[in-house]
Structure formats: structure tokens, C-alpha cells
Image 1 (cartoon, rainbow, N blue to C red):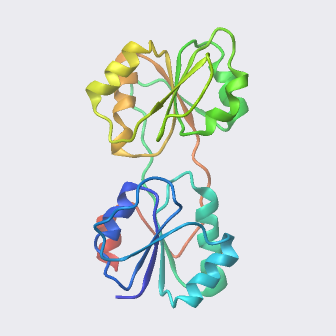
Image 2: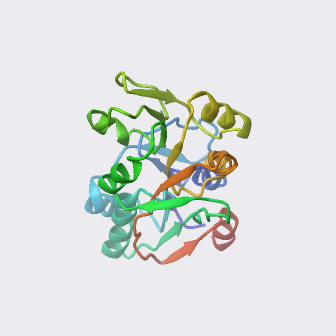
Length: 236
């Protein structure tokens, strides 16, 4: 097998990493836990942009770059595609399919923070599942709203906001309890396509709650695209 550099960031990346031997490298940005049961090498931290990644590919004699980062990690994916162009090392991307709204859903896509804040005006008890990004906007909370934020780790907020530290996968009954106890009337989410975080959408559907979806960024073209781990592994 060619020497692989796997850029991780989603659950599926770990599934790929568990198939790799000691000559391969699994790279993590440093967010979350580093698994201890892998046979491959694990690298934590950035590369210094596209040029730094290109230098690493050449310096480590990497034959194949696999981008299995989060669908919203647009900068990392752009760096991977550019490094592939600079070095001639093929770049394969695992692109998780987006969630699709069902007939009973009230999903509204927003393009950015300003559009999101405007769309939130009619609501009182939003639940943000965007990670830490809303923490930079706590001073923008309207007087009639109380925000609930869910991120990987709890952190300080203010008297108009509660931050819940939690990691998926999330269970349906737990999500129902969260929505009920916090009296959530609107859900804000990225369209990650992850089964681990999908139960919140079912609860919103059950309760007739609007979902504001932060639109996916445009990702670059690469050598090959895959939508499942199985298809990618079969191609190796």
C-alpha cells in the first residue's frame, strides 16, 4: 500500500485510521481526544498552510493524501487540494453526504452569522449546535432571548446564555429531554451529515420546531471523491 497521510476530523476518519499500518500517518488538528489503539502514526497539530503541508508530503515521502476532515473545515480542505497541486501527490476526499429535509421539516438555510441573527429574531429559546463560534457573539443576545449552546467542553458564558459541554453520539431520549427542559423553540445547526448528531433533527421534527441550517462551504475539487468509508477503503 502507498504511504498515506490521513487528515482526520470526523468519526469516519478514525474508522479509516484503524485500518492503517505503522508506515502511515493519521493527522489531527488537536481538537478532541487522541485515540490510543491505532497501529499507524498519529500527528497532532497544523502544517503551516498549504505550503507547509506540501513540504511535509515531500519530506515524508507521502504517496497519497486523504482529506477526511469536517465538511465545514473549508480552509483545511483548500490547503489539502493546493498541496496536492504543488506536489503532484494525489488527494482523495471523503465527503459525507448532507442531511436532507423531510416533508414535515421546517429547515431554513442561512449563509452566515449576520443572516442567522436576523432569522433568529422571532424566537426566544434557541439551541446552538455550532461548536464554540457563538461564544464570540454573546454581547449580541437580544433582551427577549436566552441562548443554549452545546460545545465539546463547557466554558464561561453570561446571564443570557448557558453553555453545555457534551460529545456525541447523542441519544434520542436525551435530546428530547434537552429540548423540553430548556424550552427550545429553534435549533441552529451545521449540516454535518453525521448520524451521531442527527437525533436533534428528529426532535425538532417531532416538536414542529424550525431548524436554521448554516450552509455548507464550497469545497475544492480533488483527485477522487468518496461518500462512504467502505468505498474509499476498497479503492486503496
